Length: 391
Image 1 (cartoon, rainbow, N blue to C red):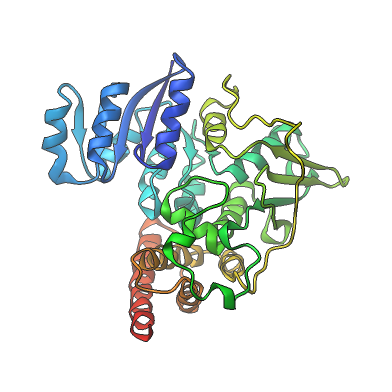
Image 2 (cartoon, one colour):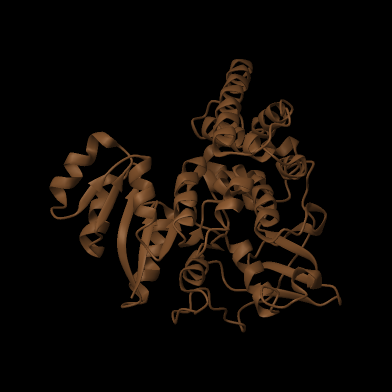
């Protein structure tokens, strides 16, 4: 059996990861689980999967969890996260936001395979993560459906092993569903509510990523992530709106051939791919009934109504700590929207203001990235307060 550490076990990715484990009995042995707030759910998961270690986000609840799980090591804090990340042959990072960075670095530094669902850590600290990827034995497999699709398209054409490698690739095309507001003009988006933004037409995700999908910031972050993962450059990474979410992304080669990965929307396919690589699991998550699939539509993104996508391209091209700045500001702005402190349309305004403060600080260390992250959050909160006062 392959040992598995799952951090962020009670979130959307974590719950679906355990679905994959259940579907493939005898494949994975869950040795560590970690969650932030949903302690009761975490205890229930531990009782089912019998990990050796459980990490709790709230240190004040460690004793409570320890009492509920006799014989299991229960801990809290960054050191505990790092220890849990080093336990499994495979580490699934399903932690939401910048908080997932310690898990990413601990897993790679320990030479483990990292199934990465936490795009923010790679985006915010790309140069730092790239150094950690050089650790002997370390391997990073993307869980995002788009990057998982690109990985499969590249793998199918021997890009990772052939001498020509990425020289064969002309461009990567990331697909986006368009979210719940596809087709609306900027003026029609003025009165968007939290309920509207969380009503995603095809994917079931957590609230933060669902709001990001509605603003197209999720796709913008994925553009930065694609550059970090595959190193192709921003001029050769494009986005196209595809509302059916069946074509998960495409790779166009230098001879004009385009290779795509298709399946029905189901994150468990991507999770299983990353966990089992280079094998494939036997459970057909996302299988298509070709007799029922009637059409596949594509259109360019509307960057006037959804400016977050262009802001992400701008931050990516600035490089260094600019993506960290953008990511931190976005986390603050999205939370403020979820708390109903700002309008949905204020999110890109806040990001543009904070990104304008980028001073070119290099992302040469984890400390530099964390300092920029903290600075950006403070600035973003100040802008949120100004926006709230105007409402």
